[in-house]
Length: 483
Image 1 (cartoon, one colour):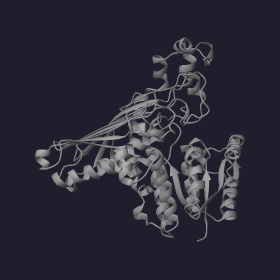
Image 2 (cartoon, rainbow, N blue to C red):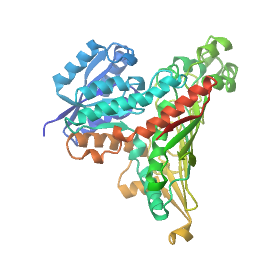
Image 3 (spheres, one colour):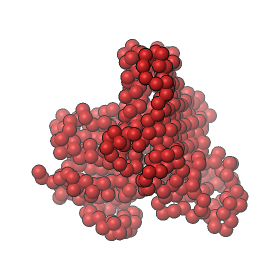
Image 4 (cartoon, rainbow, N blue to C red):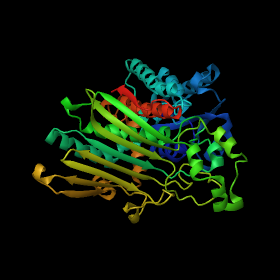
């Protein structure tokens, strides 16, 4: 079979950790080749150094920076077109910062390319402070979906969104349990509580200078890892849908914690006490600092989502997202690897109720900030592979089984005959699915995260951002929209 050539756009921390090594490794299993990559000229030295150090051979194209809201400039578009034509590229991985997603996705769709794109589907500057920009997320999605459907008529095409929780065996098992109970008792999910914390401790100077997952563009935690949680909330609710009990509206209220609130909890005097002369001061007065960060994105976001049917609330969902949580960082100068090596620690919890019949809890707690170790201890609480599902059941109503049973990540791995860190293996499955579709080995109906399955997830993210924007401008924070 002829080798399929692929293009990577954006060689940032996520691509370096996941995409580049995966595609070079998977070239041994599939007739594919990651042949070229694109980044901005200001990243040239960093990217070239990485490729040289890791001995990856990629044709690099470096573009001038551009305003992503205006789309890709004609001269840059011409260079991208020439690259595709030169190497007969059939698929593209879009791993840029999220405000550039739409511009590159539109270009790729018009070129007839298969797409694998990072979450969120799109972002705009100021979505957490300007409601009109937050509402624009839904418009962006609709425009990309329409363009995708238009080109789908020409040939079968994948446009996969990389939300790896859809590919984790643990979440598959939870959805299976929800679905079985819904069918047995004709009851949907009646409430859900979700918490995600990543321990991303940024010092005041870093808040205003860091570009990787930076806050200065007017969005934060919600647009970073938050989209994963909104998407999985809907995926799990959807697993228990009952035909005559489906919601038709959403109501959303968001309570953000911004850098302005964070500095009141941890001020510069505190940092000086912790780290002494190693601490890098902002050089700004308190008022100057607050003025500078007044329109920055959120650090934390606590959210209530109400699912309504005919105006009545039928399900409460809370999604609480935190950067300012337990961290392992204990040093003043940030590490070079801000993605996984700067003290970040993941804590994740889900509590899902199905009326009086079933309660499912997911517990996923790390205690280490270095996540590449995988050994027998990693499945315990605090380990890198810790992931447990607790199931409580009304056995009198079920008529069989146990009132409580537990499923661990170790159990799931043994059943699936896989090893390695759970999240990393899920990302591997995302990439394999993308490759197998391009090679014609699976159909579009087999794709777990195609763009046409993300409508409600986008609305949830947009609604949270709209509410956040309203609350920060002293307007009504309650947002309502149809499903």
